[in-house]
Image 1 (tube, rainbow, N blue to C red):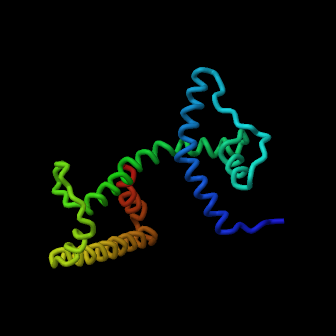
Image 2 (image 1 turned 120 degrees about the vertical axis):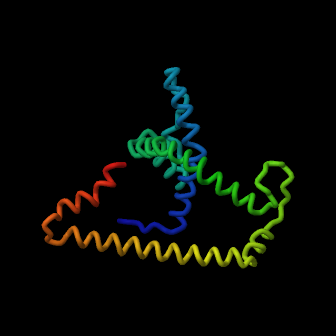
Image 3 (image 1 turned 30 degrees about the vertical axis):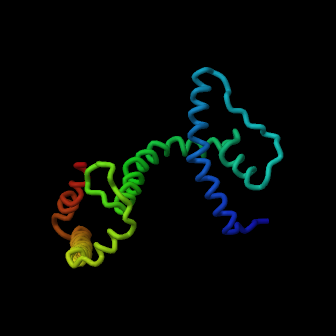
Length: 180
């Protein structure tokens, strides 16, 4: 019999998985690596212990020695460098910029920044220059997207027609992708 998954179960499992990936599995990776270096098993999980619904799912999915759990851990281990880089170069600067947008920061790290709240946002949305620039940027973006797609569609239509130099056109259009 197939059981329907409830939304709450899905959300709880997602939150547990996120917690395990960022809080539990990275230290487990480090401890297991150190254990392998010293040839000693530093982590032993009690396989026979009675668990609740979510802790049994967590154990079976992430912490046991079953193939599914091992595959999940390997996935996280390979994903960790990308997540770390993304966090370091995207997430951290985003939140730092958000913090600075709520202060009177001048661009110099003087340490004298005072929290002004949303006053900066109120000021910028009342500024005519910002509104003008924003509208121009939206117009440019829309026209740029439309123009690029029209040109790409036209070129795609050209290379599927029965023309004499069809293969030359295809090679010329595809060559910039090969250079990178």
